[in-house]
Length: 202
Image 1 (cartoon, helix red, strand yellow):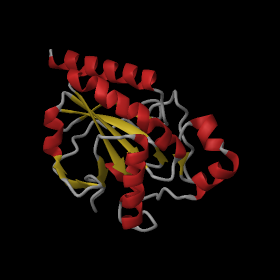
Image 2 (tube, helix red, strand yellow):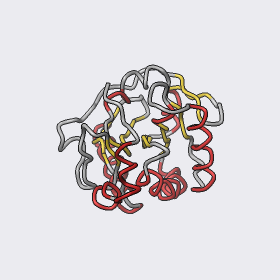
Image 3 (cartoon, one colour):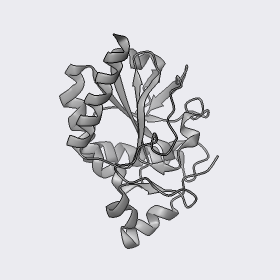
C-alpha cells in the first residue's frame, strides 16, 4: 500500500503549490489530479460493492453498510486533517448536505489520516477532526477507517480529497473524483450521478 504522507502538504505550506494549482494533496509517488480530472479519465473507475463493514465516527457512534439505505445516493468524501483543499471544501459539502437531503442525497466524510498505520497519533487526529467539524460547521458524519480500510477501498487512494458515490445497495456508482470542487460543481456532479442511477433503475 502506498502511504499518503505529510510531505506534500508541508510543501504546500511553503509554496501553496498543490492547493491553488491542483486542488488536492498527494503522496510523493502519485501526482494529484486536476479538478477537471476524474478517476474514469485516469482508468481508475471502481464499480464494486463496498461490502459489509462497521466503522465509528469521530464521536464514537457506529455505522455499517446499512447507512447507505437511508439515501438514494451517498457522497463519500475521503480527506485528511492536514490537507488544506480538503478542509476548504467542507463548508460547501455541509451546504450540499443540507440542501440535497430532501432529494435523497447523503454525505459522509472519511478521515483517512485517522487510520492505523497512516502515521501520527490516531487519537490526536480524531481530536483534530473534531475541531475541524466544529470550525467548519459540518454536521454530516466524519468516519474513522477500520483496520481493513473499508474492505480495501481506501488502500488505493494516493491523493486527497477523493470522492466517490454509493447507491442504496452499497455499490459504488458513477465516477471517482480526485481534488476539491466548488458547491456548484459538486451539485452538478451529484445531479448527474442521481440521474444516471435513475436511468439504470428504469
